[in-house]
Length: 329
Ligand code: ASP
Image (cartoon, rainbow, N blue to C red; front, side):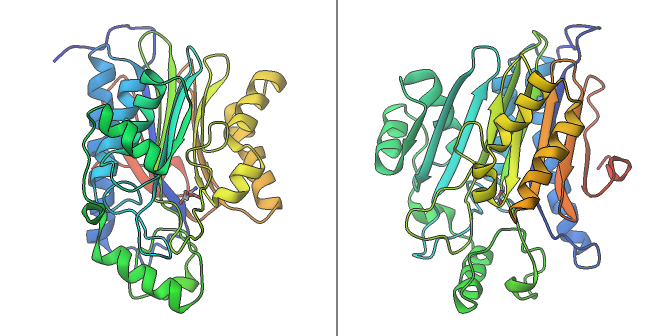
């Protein structure tokens, strides 16, 4: 195993697996453990890339692919269903060094949408591809294509039936499938921000969006500057929450601009963005990372699945408030 390449340059990877009304008394230990295990695996996968001298972009992809492949998160396998009963997936990625970006929206056949977003960034002249076109492009790029039914999970299907019965368009994190959907505000989505040994930042985000979403709805996740943003001159950001409000506040760029133009500390910038989101009725969380390796994991919900790993290679994960709640699993 390669060692960390610099003594002075911090390596850092911060991830989230969605924010929401996660209640301690309702999060069953086995379920919490499943979440924490996947978060830990994700951090280790991304850290292995960074520790071997790989790029922040590759670390972000490695971390997100683990969460997309796990049915516990609302991204890739395990994504929520649209009203019509499809899993329509969105993802985006951004390279903070050159401010290159790629994204896909409403894809139904691409196993790992974050890889498709990366292919858009590296092998097309575009930033955002949608639907059938994005799927054809992913196939041309030899990415793994699956049947739409690959994304089916019983738990998500049942959530859709509840949401339809309640006439609700809901966010994810139905941690307690016995509870009525309308009593829990839920968010899903996975994201990662990374800093590599060359001092380059990257960010990525991937989601199934909202349960019971309609009419080709797309949220903030595949929109550069809203769900994802990275610029070496400021910060890398990945968001989760009520996408419409994150779009309306340009959450990712907004946070970066406060750091760059107003010299705000990253926590302060993230909190300010979340306050703007709350002021228009939204909620969720942001992970933010700068080129010094300083990071923030902020949310205005009761919990956000999240984790961090640095030079020591120790993965720390948690869900409830307070960084002291992060633990090693
Ligand atoms: N932001 C995502 C969306 O609106 C959902 C989430 O983060 O849970 O599509």
